Length: 179
Image (cartoon, rainbow, N blue to C red; front, side, top):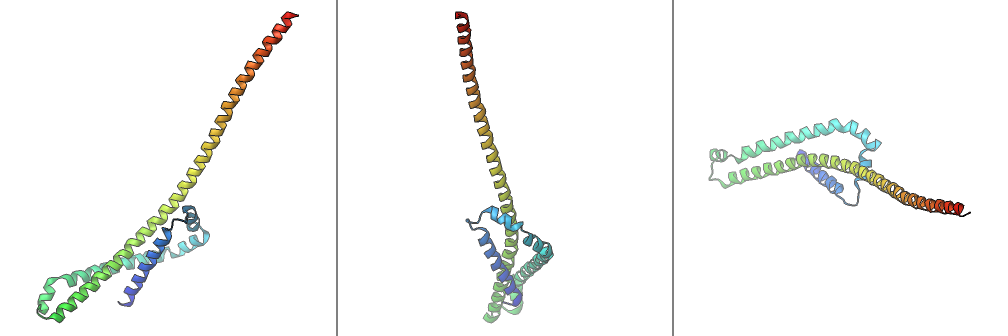
């Protein structure tokens, strides 16, 4: 492989490692959200966003080049012009076709994983926001439930007190009548 295809393959391996890291179940989305929203990463993102788009454009160009090479070496008419009978020529054409297909898959998966990583980062951030909202809603619901229970138990106490006050007023009224 030439140098630029080695670099693209290295980038593909780096992307696979990043995706494996993002998929670890013991790292909570809250931690990922704190990491993505850190000042260091925001500053780095502001500087590197243009480089990311340049890298994406380079990957697209190499992907299109790999498609062009595949079409060029997959064409059966090119083999007829050079002579089908020579095994050496056929082997060279098949070797070039194999290399172009390999380059197609390397650049295609690199592009695909760029999009997957971007989507995963967005989903992890959104998941942490939803978890925070859920925990806030649960805390609010439990406090509302406690307040409702206190009000309900307070009403029971109030009704019991009213009964006792009513009984005591009757007794007091009976006691005053009896004197």
